[in-house]
Every structure is written in C-alpha cells, then in structure tokens.
Length: 558
Image (cartoon, rainbow, N blue to C red):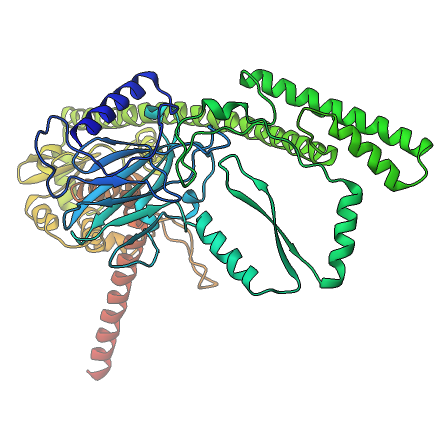
C-alpha cells in the first residue's frame, strides 16, 4: 500500500508539472488519500477511493484540505478530449464527516448541472440511487485548472460502516445490456432477431438487432444484400501502443478513421475529404443519370466508388446542415459581442456620471453649510436685538428684503440636497434665553427644548409652526396661497413666508438626520411638511369655529 501511494504521489507531482491528463493510466484501486506529511496507518476519516469496477471512472485524487478533494476523471476511449463520465466509491468514512469533491477536468462547455441536475449517490445500506440536492452542486470554469470546467458538490457522510458510490447519472453497464438481450433472445419472439455484427476494439460483441414483422424479414435481408451497405473501417494501428486493457472499458484506446499527426492536419484532411466526397458524388450522380438504366445500378456504382475511399465519408446533407448551424452560431455570437460592448460603454458612462454626481453632492453640502454660517454671522453683525423684541410684540416679524427673500425661496424650493447632520445644540445659537433658528427667527429656549422631545414628525412640525408664526397668523394664511377647489367661492389666503417654510424643513431635516442616514427616507419624510402645516391650519380654524359656536350658544341662552 505504501509503495502504491508513493507511486501515485510521484505521478500526481509529474502530472501537475506537465499539466496534461494523458498521464492518468488507469482507475484508482482502493486508494487511501492521506494528508500531506502524515505517517502511519489510515484512520477513520481518511477516505479510500475505488473505481476498478465495471463503468467505473476515476483516475486521480488530490488531497487539498481536510474537507476538500480534487478528482481527475479519465477521458473517453474514442476521444481523449472528452471527459464527462465519473463513477467511483468512497469508504472508511467518519460519521458526520463533511467533504467537498471537485471534479476538475470536465470538458463540456454546457452541462445540465447548470440547470438543476445533480450527481447520483447510493450506499450499501441504501442501494437505491438518489440525487444530491442541487443547491449543493456548482458547475463553473476554473482558471486554476487549465481553464477546465469544474463540478463541485458538498456531501455529508452519515454512517461509518457504509460504502458510498457517486456517479454522473444512472449507470447502465455492458453486462446489464447483455443480460437484457439474452432474456429477449430466450423468448424466441418472431419479430425479434439478434445477430453478431462483429467485435469491438476491446474484443466485445457488437449486436445487430432486427425488430420487424416475420413476413418482412426476407425482404429486408434481400434488400441489404443487394445494396451492399458499406460499414466504415476503423484504423486499429494504435492498439499495439495502448496501455493495459481492463475488463470494463478502462483502456486508453483512441479510435480514428485515419491516422493523423496533429489537430490541424486532421481538420484540413477532414475538410478535403468532405469536398472530395461531395464532388465525387455529384460526378457519379451526373454520370448515373445518363448511363445507368435503373436506380439500383446507380446505387451499386456509387457504393463501389465509396468502397475505394480511405477517408471518412460524411453525407452532404449533414455537412450542409452543420455548416448552416455553425454560421448561425457565429452570427449570434457576433450580435452578443456587440451587445456586450454596447452595455460596457453604457456602464462606463454611468460610472463617470455617478462619480461627478457624488462630487457635486459633497460640494453642495459644503456650500449650504457655509451659507448657513454666513447668514448667522451677518444677522449677528446687523443686530438681532430688535428682531427679538419684535418677536415678543408681534407674532409675524418683519419680512426680510425682497432679494434675500427670493434667495431663501429659491434655496427652499429648488434645492434637492440637504446639509450633513450636525448636533442640534452646536448648530443653533443660544442667547438671552432665545434660540436662533436662522434668517432672523428666534424662539423661546424652554419651548425649543420641549419641542426636541416631541414624538413624531407631524406633531413636531405642527408645534414648530405655531412657535414660528403663532396661531393668529396661521388661521389667516395658507401654505401655497391658492384657493381650495372644494368650495366654488373660496377666497385665496396669503401664503406663508417661503424662508420660514425653509427653516421648518431644515429643522425637521436635522431631527430626521439624527435617526437615519437613508436619503430616500429623509426626502420622503420631508415631503410631508406642507401637509402637516395644512392640517394644523385646519385644526386652528376648526377650533375657532367651535369657539364661536359656543359663544353664540351662550349668548342665545342669556
């Protein structure tokens, strides 16, 4: 066992250095995978792989980590570039042991594993094949394995005494097929006949099955013998150079129609042979129309001409169909590449716009913050004392200059950017028991602190509006200055001051910014400021009407 492991270790190192799958000479046989640097007898959890059975395929196993193994499958017998099938067993497992198997040298670009298919698994205690959950299966192209396609799946062993078997799909062996055909042959059915057509490269029987009614058997035999159907010959010169041949298709034999040295010569020779066959068939068809007297003679001549060919024969219809399919795929690929290039350019442009937008947002925030500070400094230098006294005497202070008011209105109505949130006590100026909100607006400090503990945006906005305008002003004003559409003879009321509305929005923004940083949520909550103020005006008007009704009722009673 130690010698076998050492040989496999040297083989694996050579294979990784060369980077070729041709070094995989045969299937693994009771191969124990041990961690690097481990010396001693295998323990529970040191997995033992085996593929030396009919339809088995596993050429090499590499230990990556305690939970991960790389598996290399052997190529198909007739084409070394095709690597799809795998079938192997695992034993000496530990209960609840979790592993990841990576089949690292798949050759198929498209696979049903991408569409929900999953490998099969069974064990000695559960002999029925089951599929691994598709959520544990991944099929992708890995640059670390020569850009081959890798299929990874995770599995958890649940019973230590079981031997687990994994396969690409449901296995169907040659032996099972022979048993099935033997059972059919023993029934002596009139419409079924089994004949030996020849032997395969591996010296296995090739069966010819005929399924038809008994009266048609003689006609079919005569037709086949008269037309002399040609079976292409296979070149078997390479069999002598092939490796060891096992019992169940484990030899590395390559079947080809003709012996060629490299892929380029093979493709050129195939193309030339196709052109030669097509030209010869056209020539023979033209001669047969003028010289032959019956279709049977024409077919006999064409079949004799085909017998003299050494290269592979491809039907012209099949060749044209494949050529059309290839051209269509090329055209589709060209359209896809153009679409990808167009999408890439759009993404680049959007990335540039987003970068510019971020720079503009940050610059706008800095400008708004600086503008706020300059306004506060300017109001302090001009003297805010009279404004305080005016606020005490009259709820509605003197409106600022038209130019300043226009500037404030434009900033409040057109700007979609909001300043960065700062602490409330650091942002607003406290002086003589008053809090300066900006633009010459002062409110009582005690009421301001009570406002900060108010719950809800609606109540906060309504109380702040009363603090700024007062109920006497609010009941005779409207937010927009437009008459309501519910009453036909409604008279429009004067609108509220735009710069004060902007102060209400900024105060509410500072409050919301302390709770969240989501710009979408902030904009959504700020959009309801006008609605809250309208509701407050309606409440004030309703309370005034109720008061008038009570007074009228009291007067009538007197």
